[in-house]
Length: 357
Image (cartoon, rainbow, N blue to C red; front, side, top):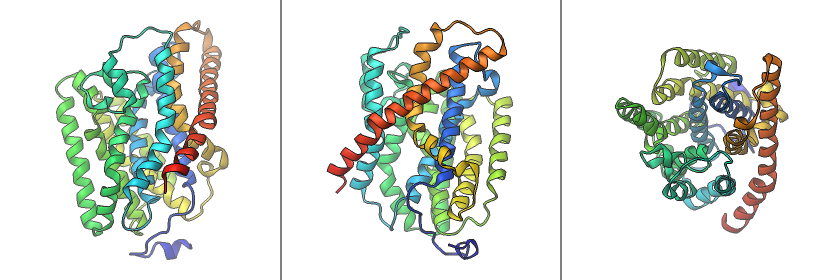
């Protein structure tokens, strides 16, 4: 579709087959950001240090991107709930369940956790509890999947409702949702550090980022995103916002709120670059593959780090630190590839072949 034609007001863009390559590739960088956040917390010698102190904002990127991609890939004016949920369960739950079972027999590092936390984690409801021992039980990173499960539950009806509204009506609905969720989270987080952690993991609070993703996808689909800049401008917006958050913000909830507009801008810019067939590093087959396995990387990386890093000798010198960090990154990538090919792909095929009818 020629760019000039596709940009005409009111023209709906037809979602291309498969993933948007740049958006898929950017998943890899978001996962790497979260990896860089966790690594120094387990080994004070590790790379990253203060620069990666707010790397947890990579999860906010995933939430915005999730809303965008699911909306963009949903065709027609009505999203059929059953098919949508089957596809989401097939995509997420098998790998989560396997890593939860792995977490039951590790870590080698002893941690105390309640049985309720284990059960809640397997059921993906752990983030609703105002206790970090429950929210981060078993495979700690799966708290974000608890949020995604809530988003998926609502998504068919939300996307359908948005499709039936005007541009202004859709924007009013979803931006109000984001504002209410953000303000609620900030109100909770101001009580204490513990409250900030709970608000950070609470699905109701984080649903605003998903809503922003839905809005951005719908505006692009309707041809209303002529304001979108080139991808490099979106990258600069994210880097600049990250720098501001790094220097001035101590609330995890506030960090997510401040990063969301920059993430939305970057996602829209990258999506339009894909739609119009522009070339770029993020859209290469290698980056797309790394983005595809990034979900498995996200699931395996912290569990691997928490079991391995405490048993490693501290490296001497900068070269040793870089080599060890790269070695751990490679180990996480290998584990992610194994999970992707042994569990994620075959489980998706099996579930969809039996239930997605």
